[in-house]
Image 1 (spheres, rainbow, N blue to C red):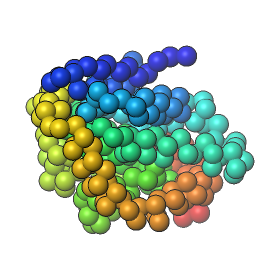
Image 2: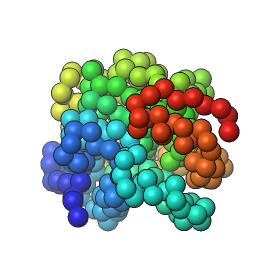
Image 3: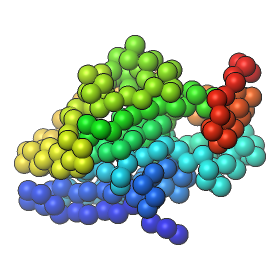
Length: 267
């Protein structure tokens, strides 16, 4: 089985920085089910790591193209019964929750493009650093799906209601680094090719702080900010399962794979 995720520890001040590199070797970094599992395992591997204060997550040429619509396991969803489908659809929420709940501070270094599930993963992190020539896009609605993986509440906390609707509903809209910064979707913009360096510089500042105080502060802020999120985000999986059975979803994915404009009919 191919390894898509590599972890390097012991970097920076007092060796308190770790780097998680997601690289499928194709420059696209689509999130296949296996990639979701490996990234989830990577986050969980830090559960008992008292030596690491900060984790930087980076892609290769691009952060991620989102869920891999061409992956055989992913495409098999259309043949699954509802129960099997609901279990399979938990892979994404499990990934983002694992990264959000890490005790360490997490920083995403975004180059190239960050699309769909890539955005869902990025907003589960504590901070995002984005290259000036990179862009974000949330195409789920344009594919006849809903934006899931519990990302809508996270985007809402960062940007507010109107910007969240704008980002999610206008599915074809590319969000530039300048717009993402203005919308508060990212915290820092770096020169092209320098997102990782900027993320490591931020990580060094965090790593220089007292680790226990940092961890407790993160926990407090997250618990307060996300206290009510589960009231809505539990619907993610069922909304996605329902949407995936629609004609519009079949049309959206078919149009994407055939490189044509979809025709949605609301059914």
